[in-house]
Every structure is written in C-alpha cells, then in structure tokens.
Image (tube, rainbow, N blue to C red; front, side, top):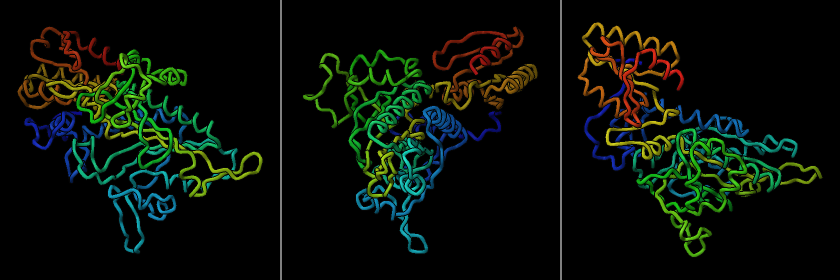
Length: 435
C-alpha cells in the first residue's frame, strides 16, 4: 500500500481524553476513532491488526478441534428468562423492544443461544463431545467505559462452548482450551499468566483468567516465580503435560487472592499488574438443565450435558499488546500481528534516482508477497521516520540519495533499533525469510 493513498489520519499531539499508552497510541497512529462513549470505528490500519489477531485466535481454535459458526448480535429475551439470567444480569445488558413488542437484547455473551441451538439439534451421546465457537461483536453497557478498546462497551470477542457427556470429558475439553489459550497468546509474542478466577455472571465452579503482564494493568496478579522460567517459545509448544506442571504456579487476581490460604510460598510469590485477555469457565449443567440440553446415554438415560465456555477479547488484545510492547516513539508490534511487515521509506521524493529505486524495490516486495507500506509522500524525512516509529511496523527499509549511489539501503529493526546498510537484494532476502 502506498502511504499517499492510505487513509491513515495520524496525530502529532497526544489526545487529552486518552489516559493510558494504548489509547493514546491507537488514536495517534490513526487506528481507531471514537464514535460514542466506549464505541469505536476501526480505521484501515487498526482493522489490519484486528484481523491478524482474529486469524491467530481462529487457527488455534480450529487446531484444538473447535468448529466455527456465527451467531447474531441480537438475541431473544425469552431465552435468557429460560436460563434465569435475564433479570439477574443487570444494567450492563442493552435491552431492546422491536416494532412487534418483542423483547430483545444486544448479546453480552452467548451461553443461552448456543445451548438452545445444541438442545434442538443433538440427542445422543454418540454426537459428543462438541465444541462450537464464533468471533462476534458483543455489547456490555459499562458504567464507566475508559482506556479506549481496553474497556469499551462494544467489543469483538471469540467465545467457544463445549458440550460433554460427563465431568471427566468436560474437564478434558477445558484443559484442551487451556492449552489453546497459551499457544494463542504466545503466537502474538505474549506470555500469558493463567490465574484462578471468579466466574462472575457466567457461573460455574472452575474458572481461569489469562493475564498479560503490564505496568498499566488493572488487576494485581499473583503467581509463583517459577512461572517466569516458561518462555514464549515454550508456550508455543504447550500441551496437557505442561498445563499439569503449571498447576500450583499461579494463584489468583485481586480480591480472589487470599494470602493466608495461598499455596505459593511467600519467598516465591510474585505480584504484578496484569491485563485480562481471556477467561475460561466450566459450569457443568448450569445452562443445560433449565434449557433442556440433554442427550440419551449408552444406558438409555436422559443426561444433561456438561458445559464450559471460553472467551478471548480479540479487540481488547490490540490494546493489551500495545501496553506490553511500546516505547517513547510509538508502538512496537510483534511481527505476527503487525499491520505491515515492512515500511519502505523514500527519503527524497523529488529525486528521480531515489524514486526509481524505491518504486522498483516496492514492486519486488509486493511480488514476493511481503506486506509493505511504501511511504512515497512528499514529506520531510523527519516526518516519515516519526510516522514509521509511531505505527510500529517491525522493519524499516530506507532509500536515500547516498545509498542509491552506493547500492545499499538502510535496514532497521523497529524493536531493537539495530540498523544495517545492506543491498536491496539482501533486504529482500531477509524479509522473505521472515515472511
């Protein structure tokens, strides 16, 4: 994409309404714009990041055996009355009455709807287990929406739901999702800390949150120092044995942590700030019993299925990654989620040789399938460098008059600041190897 054609309304000044780094940088980098309190439009650069995160989540859900579907944003109030949650959920639920006087709601989550779909379709134990998921927009009317996409009212979430015949099978499904979550976050360059959690309005008796450690996190996370020995690379290869070894290395977050009852020795207990990006629940028959989601067992009995649900804050992850990965110049994207792999900068717009060299390399990068943002604008070099650092693309290739004469380009790593002078061919080879 040529920068001159891209809709990328960057801002030089820090917006006064932005209180944390991710909110400031997402606004300044032209990723989002607020349309109402806690509700954002995703502009082209922000949407590219959102879609990259979404795809990683999708691939790991598919790998874990979950099947993708899509449920609507608007649900029937009657379903929620059937489960008993309609009146209990509170003012966070946006309630709607249509022209036929039917009561509807903008879904904050989908336990009721997916249970109803399952109950109307599955009858036998032979059809179990099942895990169904979708990636869909949700709405929760937060009393104080703040921190940009970190605590918005409308947000994109992956929610999955497992159905099993018995508790043993449900636990197996739960742990399979646990593994998928560790892998998902690791692919984004993140080491997620799992902690025991309060199930809240979802319900159930087994629940874990996954937190990204960041100084700006809203939660206090407590865990064993031994957890720090697990690298992101190890998390990429997470399995059930790793999850079993981790048990006991994490405690809880905030008010759920009881220092007196904590199983972690005091000399190994660590406390950090964390940002919640995922939450998994096992709630047994909380929804299946009242909503008639039962199957016939091998002995002919009618058995209410055991259920779990598994959420990932897809849009929230955009902000969480920025909180965990930025510097004084701007965002530092992990390569797996970055909007582009490389930004190509033509330092001298009016110089025919520079433009020819930059145009030629841009064409070669495109032909090699490398996502490239080509800054071809008639702007001062300082402006181009500042924008490149602000939007956080992992690699920068700079073409200037001196380099053209010497047959080299400047090749820069955004994260480390390391700069090399290499040939355009070497730059292309390095980027191709990283593709």
